[in-house]
Image 1: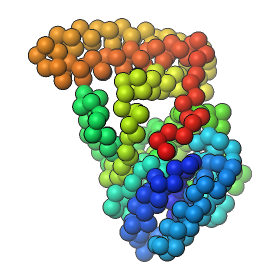
Image 2: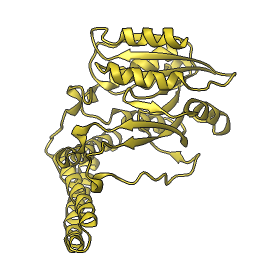
Image 3: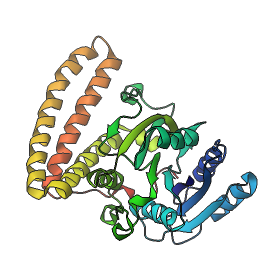
Image 4: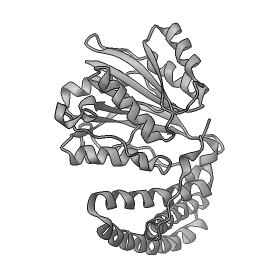
Length: 316
């Protein structure tokens, strides 16, 4: 296998260096030829020196490519098209704010032999800052066995066969990340949903682990609820792309109202349990608030509201 490990970055050289170090420390099977591409989503080479220094230190072949069109879907798409045009068989995505665990790369590529698929989706663990309220930190339990067939995936920790990007007339799927979602989030879920719809197989590989450090600014109640609100709206837009605006609108109305009612009802036992266990009460109240925020996000879609949270670099 000719493998391209792909890292998208933008003005985050310290994170990029740590990510690259974790990738270069991976064990690579004899039957795999692995190289790295760093795609800088910028019109200036702010991180070329990092790629060149790590390449010199480790001996890895590291390509550095600029993608001046701002937005994560453009950067991820450049990774895929670079790998396909350069003759790589697969592209393995990892975000620049993630650290690969030992055995990550080997686990992913070995999965292609045991579980043939166009996409292999690994697991992401989250490390929360120590000041994070304990009631906000979710349990990180893997609930799906290895090899579970999925209908979608996300863009981090994902191994993708490059034929997905290849033109249809050349035997590929001819698929690309949607640039209209450049700052909204959700372009990765949209892309892999379309891979599934095109007949691509997506399988879950929970032992291929990467770890992401959650930035401090994401540990506030406001940020968490706003993210839940935004994700609900993005999901509604994905349904619109697949089923049309009318069906998406009906679904959003029913889901939105149902979640608001359900979240409101959940507040009652949360308030009651607070007297017995303040920690448990806060956790239940947080869950209820997120359910209401999700419902409001679905209804906001009906009003045409859409946020652009990724217009600025986060966590750099």
